[in-house]
Length: 95
Ligand code: FES
Image (cartoon, rainbow, N blue to C red; front, side, top):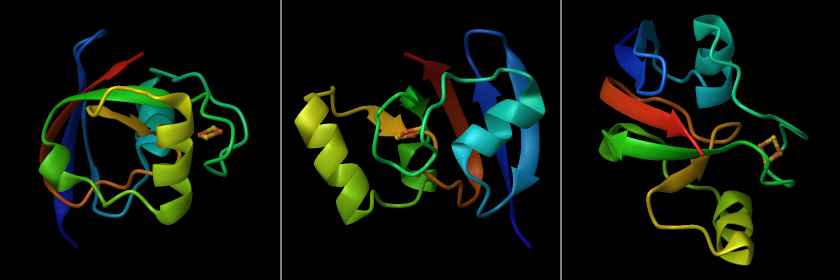
């Protein structure tokens, strides 16, 4: 199974995780603990800014896309409970 390297730029913590892992799960493993609410892609509490490596994240689902639009967030933000790592190197920062 392919791996992805995820760095939290606020703490400098880097983790290598299996492809398919959600960013919120990576955050919990890293002890970064992003703010989290529903974990279902509905509340928007888990916003994270993707500093680099956005191409290594899953495409937003219809639900995530809808929530991001409703919240009018900048283009570089994703819902950590919905975005899954696919591989490569990704740098994120809690919002
Ligand atoms: S925790 Fe609610 S949208 Fe992610």
